[in-house]
Image 1 (tube, rainbow, N blue to C red):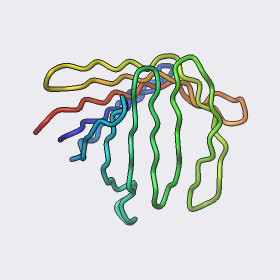
Image 2: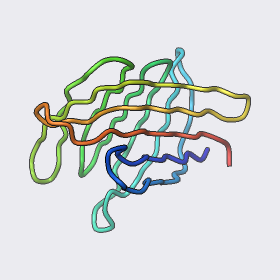
Image 3: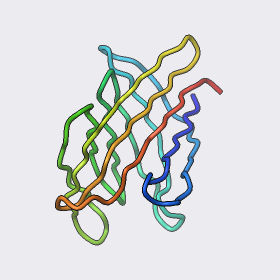
Length: 135
């Protein structure tokens, strides 16, 4: 499976989208979809192991490695998450507006719209788009 992941820019700034394409292991278990893959956060660092778990109205992103985190995107809810970096831990808020999962015969599209904040101060409004298809 190949999984293009596209982070669309903050709507209030003129930033460009960040896109990454990763080979991923995909499976479905108990109404949840799973993607397992590795990615390098920085060229000088070891790759992080990442897991994306999603179903209707909910997506969880877990990373293990240099930058550890467990982000929860649940439609119309706010979650506080610790974000561990080599320089220390940050507490971030994620307020999710929409999680849309569109399944087709040979592909899956996932869209997550959310606002990220630190101590109540908005950092960005973002959109995560995932397109899962066989190579």
